[in-house]
Image 1 (cartoon, one colour):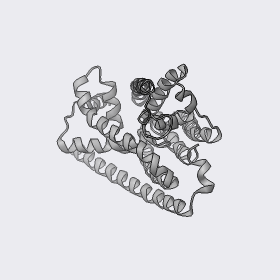
Image 2 (tube, rainbow, N blue to C red; image 1 turned 30 degrees about the vertical axis):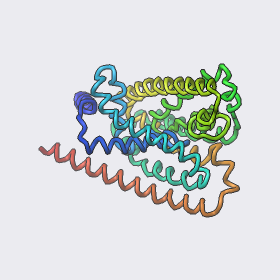
Image 3 (cartoon, one colour; image 1 turned 180 degrees about the vertical axis):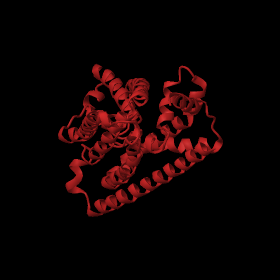
Image 4 (cartoon, rainbow, N blue to C red; image 1 turned 90 degrees about the vertical axis):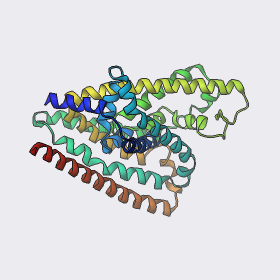
Length: 331
């Protein structure tokens, strides 16, 4: 069993990409970038649904040992993630304001449709003796993921003024925000951007780097010093994000290797909790009384349609993989 797992991990690192697979991975990276930028949406959940989660973890943690091969494997995902994140951040400025419930319903549907991925993992391994531990892991993760959105809805933290004044502690907080956001993206069910929202950094960061409007924007400012410190803060954010990805990847790799079934019980709780955070957070919750009826209707329809599409695509993929495994076993 251990030998098979080792072979699978080695294959994940060493497998060469064809032009078609490269393009497919770029597209997957785009969805990961979008999910990382949208509050309540988990990049880890999307990676699990797209069957690339283990490969990403193996190659990130294998950078030191197989640097060139891991970088080549990760490259299309990185390119796609950058494209998706930039597009999402710009789109959030416009589309989310025009139809917030529609956008939320669309992504929420894809998340609920990905549940079979986590549920299928629960059937693996002998977990009867650890059922109580599994239930506790599920409940704890459900409360954490769901609580993130509720906390943002109940609190109203705005660090914009401190960021505008370039207060010294903002340089530390920006690093922490990048570390938590990127690290959270590795954990299925936890939204990295939601973590930034909880500590009050999401909107200030968007207003600084994703728009030309407002006092915080470095693109619309004529103050050279303000621009320079803005890029310094961006560099600190990136460094924090890289550190978060590396640390979280190693933690998740160990959990999946030693406690895979328990980890997926927790992941299931995180996925369900993230649905709560998507629909109850500081961005959308205050808007509910003012949203037009068409937004609710379109959002509800997209939720059902996207859930069905995601569910059947995953089921079809799982069926094909099961048939492939049976044919290999028969040979």
